[in-house]
Image (cartoon, rainbow, N blue to C red; front, side, top):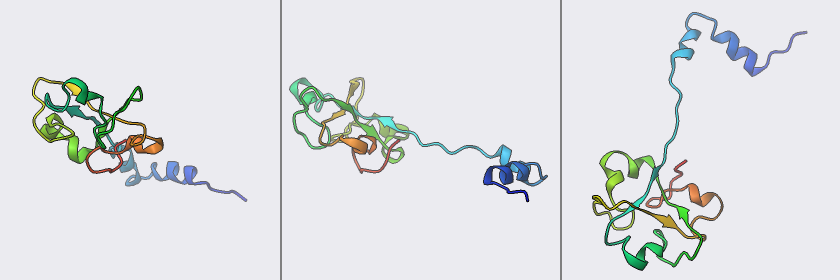
Length: 116
């Protein structure tokens, strides 16, 4: 008695005329955007503070991320902390160990959604 696995079923389904359309479908992928700070928020000792909670980060610096809602298009050029335009100042935003521990480092700095 032959057993069919899901992999066999999908491979045979793609051989059918209408099932071949599966080969043309685009793959979905999620993106994240790096968070930046403006000149006011990233100048001097303020750049050593966590972007999310404002505490001092010490030597632990985890890059802050933005989700597709907050990092797409011209919104990626806004400061992750105050929302002003970054301009030519390209200081990257970081989060502390408390805000970035475990899987929290993959979340958006602004809204907390997953930003892979």
